[in-house]
Figure 1 (cartoon, one colour):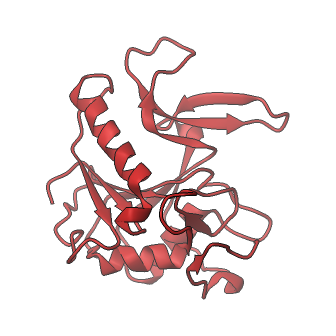
Figure 2 (cartoon, helix red, strand yellow):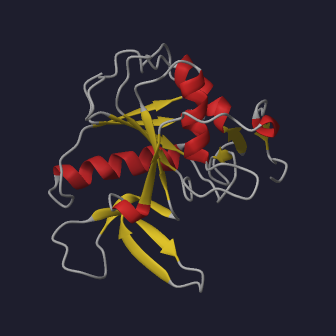
Length: 218
């Protein structure tokens, strides 16, 4: 698969029209010169035939983007409300679907969890991106790492309102303890965190399964 960015949507295509549209808009932003870099995007949904990730390039410049909605400290993501059937997928199901679609153990790039608050943990749960890294590491994926984000994330490029920015960017809102919001580029070091997956998975999170319409609170 010749691509710079592969948007992996672990839901059915009819549950993911907004994520697919975001990927198209991100590619268009690069092609038109609005974004800093011109990138080629591929979209893979769970119900796509075959193993489309099998031929994904394994250079360090390749990146898989997991699309979904999340909240701080939650070990699962969801598709959007009112688009198809509402479904919640825990980190292990998301990873199993990546593997099912052909992810190779030789893959040495990043897996970016394009999910709001995906690098924020709770008192009982590691961050979602951290759990993805731990699970894949346990499955034998030793070369990759994951990226999580510190707040609400904008997957579509936008013009930042502060600073002198020639290009539009994907952004993350950092929320301070007093509620103050600062919008930064998603590539900024304070907007994201990387995980290698070397830690164990908490026992209470080992055997989560997908759920339709509702998911128990964590």
